[in-house]
Amino acid sequence: MDSGSSSVSNICTYVNSIPMLNGSNFKKWKEFVTLYLGAMDLDYALWGDQPKGIKDSSSVEEKNVNDKWERSNRMSLMVIKCTIRESLRDTVAEEATEAKVLLQELEKRYYRSSTFVYMVLNSLPTQFNQFKVSYNCQRDPWSLNELIPHCVQEEERLKSEQCESAHLKRNSSC
Image (cartoon, rainbow, N blue to C red; front, side, top):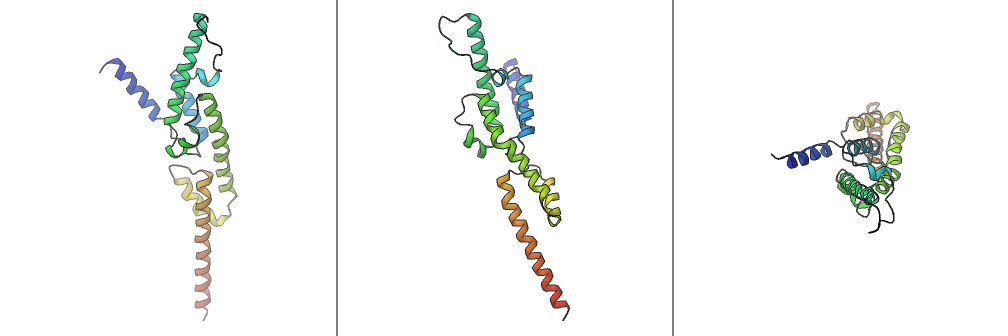
């Protein structure tokens, strides 16, 4: 195995260790993405703006800075996009041309959603305790949009249990 394919193998291993963004794990996902990009020295485009006005007459230093930014941006976009669940990728990632802007858009969209999921779970009454335990045992957390139908379904299950219990009590007193 040559060093080029070894390097590609290492890159793939590291990228595969980044958790897939699923809508409710943004904070953890962002930590892994920024750590990976920083360790690979690919995070320049996340922290700096794109150099403007590069022309044939620009200095070698200006051209080098621009090349560094463009490579960082291209690689960052690829890493970010390939670590977003496919169903979420279509909504925001396809049109992005700057990694910094994409990360900001994802943060606006998913950081608050992730926080709301835990706020909603903590606000549920004690009848939902079994539901909360089941949720916490899951491998992948839900987004707010996934949580709502599950809460409705659990509420319906609890109502039907109450009706069955009331029906049994009434029949057993005869």
